[in-house]
Length: 231
Ligand code: CA
Image (cartoon, rainbow, N blue to C red; front, side, top):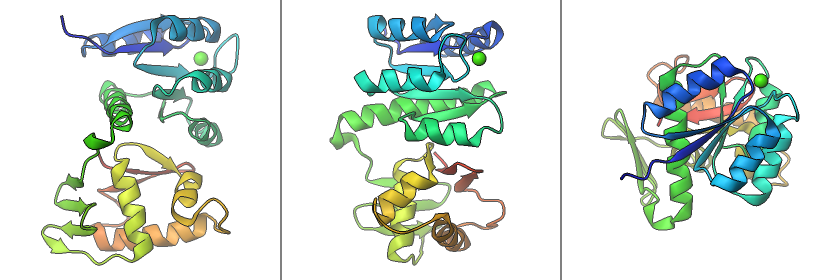
């Protein structure tokens, strides 16, 4: 028998829980359900799921508390399910160790893509040798070893900072990276920088990579949260 990854769904709204369960089960995952934070934490400890889908609005405790408790004992991927327009909540969840978030209402394709990305990244973190040496998508190739960026076969000249930004996003393709986490990674934890410098650099990158920078094809803005590169 194939060993299906188990996904723990912590969601108090029955309809949404059923909807998610149907999607994951019909795509070869095993589903576990919890309708409260306490049950979720218990199941997480007893069943060691491969991934957690966590609703932030739970009846018995704050979803952020659940996230922090899970993170204090385990590195398993956690995808937060949040309501629309709560950017600050999303950023806080990502900074507290969530791997990604998905905004209600969402479609099955979006959910499955998030799950695949989170599972893939958790496997990669486990073993450095599986790290990919290049990013390749729709004509854009980033060769991490040779530090080369090619667009439709043509060498693209990026500044040092631009290259580091693009390769950081590409190595995390499919995942959203918050403004803060990008700033810390590129300019260091103590650098006196703000989002403006990031926006300027990103605008320059888009001018070089995107056919239409206003409708990006490779690097997407997650408004109020950060950036996500096409998987
Ligand atoms: Ca809820």
